[in-house]
Image (cartoon, rainbow, N blue to C red; front, side):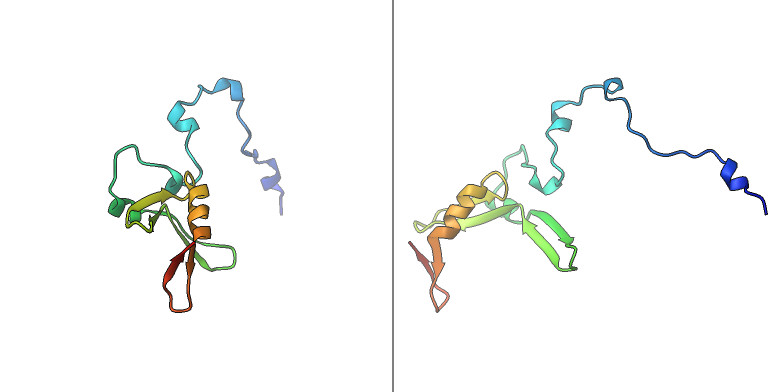
Length: 110
């Protein structure tokens, strides 16, 4: 038995010289790792935003994780607003702290 495989040339991925690449465009530089984190440049209705999903994958435990891109909230005065899960995270947290549910499932605002 010969060791011919030892004589084969080995090709491993290597980093390219960062100076040899062209500068990325603004759009390329501002891309997020998760396409669902991006905000569309065209105007969308609340209904369109409500259908968007940012994350829809299993996690390491096998549980399925599904995160909407926008959380639609209804304020006590009846107005609705679509809040982006990243850009509006602080406002979403504020809304969650304000809204409470009683033992009958009714929303109580503080």
